[in-house]
Image 1 (spheres, rainbow, N blue to C red):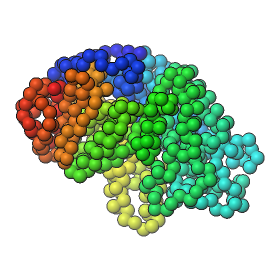
Image 2 (cartoon, rainbow, N blue to C red):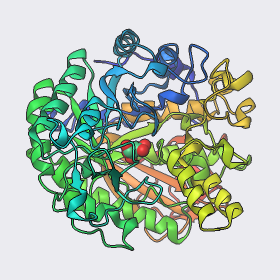
Image 3 (cartoon, rainbow, N blue to C red):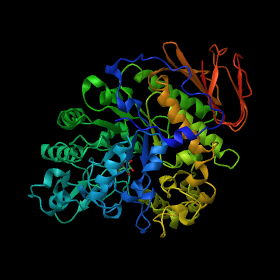
Image 4 (spheres, rainbow, N blue to C red):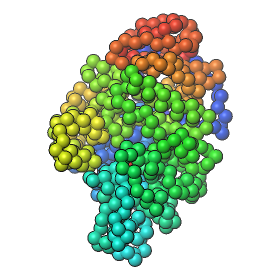
Length: 581
Ligand code: GLC
């Protein structure tokens, strides 16, 4: 499938843009090492907040259909949709009650079919979210399972009979008490839930469960989808002796929960059953606790998944000084390990984190656009497949919620209640979630300057960010210097220069506390990327010959301060420059 050349791609003569194809490398990569999912830019859509078509305040599939031309105009190759299956929405669709039907608020199966067709017609692939570490407690399987100890679905989930005593402590990420065992009086037993009480964990050790999941995957693969993102799958297999979780290590839960039991065996089975025969892509959320764990998921000879996204580095807030050094170290470590085998997804933001520019950049008016573009540059130029979150291409910011009543995310609200119960400082806690809560990234997409940002004609399910009057797609569409058009330029640059996909990555000026600098290189084609992470001017020594450097892209409207050939480059606040060397 070949994406059509977008009208907007041609239109966007953003900033100081030279011909991005300049210095184009020849075909250095053998066909056997190429893959569409390595070359793709994947755009994540949070359907609940993208576009409402029927005036109920909730985004839906027809809303996405109405924005297909926008998606095409971005130049992206694939869309990853957060879950759209039937769900009581305890966790915004990550609690599935029927894997073969569409959530009522999102539309119908006919809408889905039309969406898939519309994407494919524009050369855009579709990746679905597969949530099978757990289901909803309202799924038929669980309703049956909890109904009696003898029910044939009993061992679809993990149960602990009360007569065996209280089960050893297991940590739950989302439970209000963080207790992963929930007592159910109906059968006098506890069920396991690593996430919320309404998300009971499926028993992957049961071959019937696995068969059900592969059948579900085939149902969607038969429709023609192009891949699955495996939600929280690193936790799917369990040590079913359920040893006590060591108290105090809750932040390290991945070390105790990931890659247990026969997880890799299940993935190989899934690959044999679905990924290989259908030729579709699989990407894991989470990559275990060690580099070896990550390799075991994605190394091609293992025939499990194609890529995974490692969380390393992405949770570093405002990376300047020692924090920038840690960020660089984390990414460098990943790249050196995956440069020769395996493949990683690259991201800095998604629906589980606060907004990129607010968290890692600077959302004050003077720097919002510059720092947003600088961060986008990093996502699009590292080695690996970029996963880019909707709204970041506009430089959307944190929500600016002023009271707890405006938050919607259950774990955020639970954490607030816990704080309340223990008599904590609620003002301080509110400040913390104003900065950190994942609700910040879930406010409606800002389409234009009309009421509710053009997202809906009703009251939206979560408040629109009041800055929509200034920050919106319509305002940025024809502005060559906008974040939106900068993103389009970067997508184009990446596509026209395979060095940005396959080229080796070398960190430069490693100990520089303000600037992230690196080169990408394939045979005789080399690019230099310079990113100033600070709000002050900074200097960087790239340590490479730059005499013949040609500027390909910068986030500033005027030429860089330094001239090619200088040993040390000066960068303005949050400046990003890409040179061809
Ligand atoms: C993943 C999802 C997150 C969800 C959780 C439970 O981490 O990205 O949104 O809450 O899994 O399904």
